[in-house]
Length: 82
Image 1: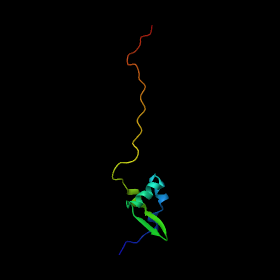
Image 2: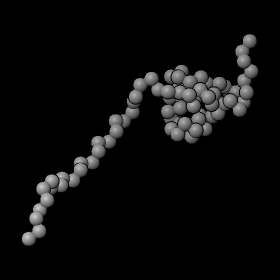
Image 3: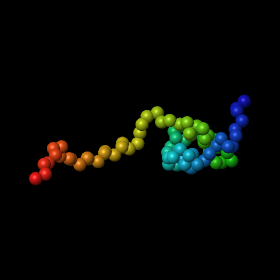
Image 4: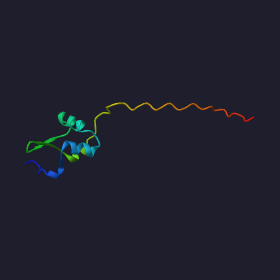
């Protein structure tokens, strides 16, 4: 017997994206790839809230961080006042 499904455990993909602080496209991608379980209720797709909140990517991906701006060069010698 499967465990009882509570509706408060389910969120829509856009809600999941807001809660996780990411895009809807990323959530839909996880759903397509089977990384998070999809629950269909009355023809609508939902995901389990705890599954989304606990999801950790296997590897680091995405765009690499931007390079740090160059620091202005300073003269290390102090100039004497004349």
